[in-house]
Length: 173
Image 1 (cartoon, rainbow, N blue to C red):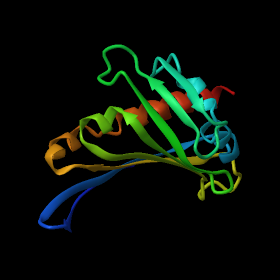
Image 2 (cartoon, rainbow, N blue to C red):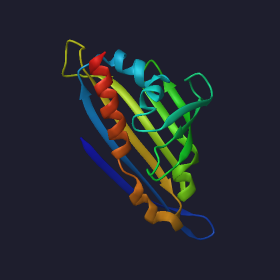
Image 3 (tube, rainbow, N blue to C red):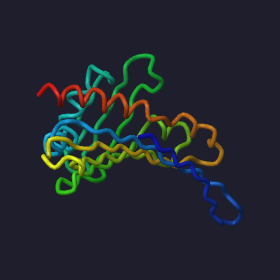
C-alpha cells in the first residue's frame, strides 16, 4: 500500500507564512508473529541488522533502546547524506509503536524543521492464527517555506529498504 498525503498549511504571524508538511507511508504483511517483528523493530537490533547492509554503521550515542535513545547513522559513501543523529521519541512496547526523529544532520541541514518516522507493528486481523503481522512505516515532515522544493526529496525508498532487509531476516529466523 502506498499513500501520500501532501498538505500546505498557513500560519499567521506578523505576515502570512507558508509551512509545508506532509506524510508518506508504506504497509506490508509479513508472515511472522507481531511479537517476533517487534523484537527486531522495537529494540536496537534493527540498527545492528541494517549496519553494513543499507547503511554503513549505526552507533548508539546514548540510551538503551528506550525513549530518548540517540543513534548516529552513517551512510554508505555516495548515498547523498553522510551522517545524521536520530532520537527515539516514543517506544511503546504494549502497542508496538516506535517514533524516531532526526535531531541532527540530513534533512535538518536542508531546511526541514521535522523529519519523523513512525513504525507500527500489528497482528494481521485477517490471520486468525497470529502467524502474520502488518508493518506500517509513516514519514512525517515539515519544511521551511524557503526550502519547500526540498520536500520532493522525501521518498519511501529508505523505509522500503529497511522493510526488505528486516523481512528477509525475520523469515530466516
